Amino acid sequence: MALIREQVAAKIQAAIPDAEVEVIDLTGTDNHLEARVISPSFVGRSLIERHKMIYAAIQEWIDDDTVHALAIKAWTPEEGAK
Image 1: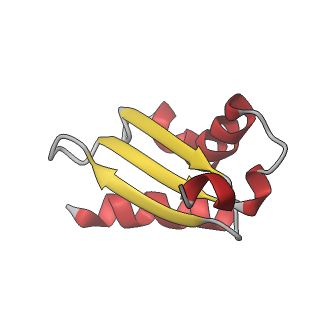
Image 2: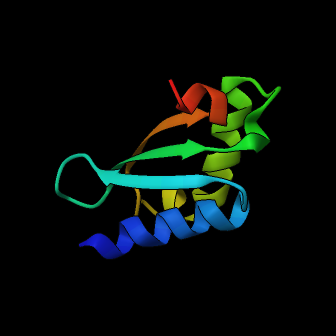
């Protein structure tokens, strides 16, 4: 169901408004996802800080197991262009 992917992307987008967000279903079960996020907000932030920003946006769905696993790719615009 594409709806959960769209909802996850929307929550990340709301938390990081300048981001380009793509969410992919890795297993066909809609609970093992990969978020690909490119944002100027990541400039000067460590990979861990970037991940925390993304996890914070959907923490409630991680806590209630709506999203069982989330792989994250978090880039600055310069890194994402490579």
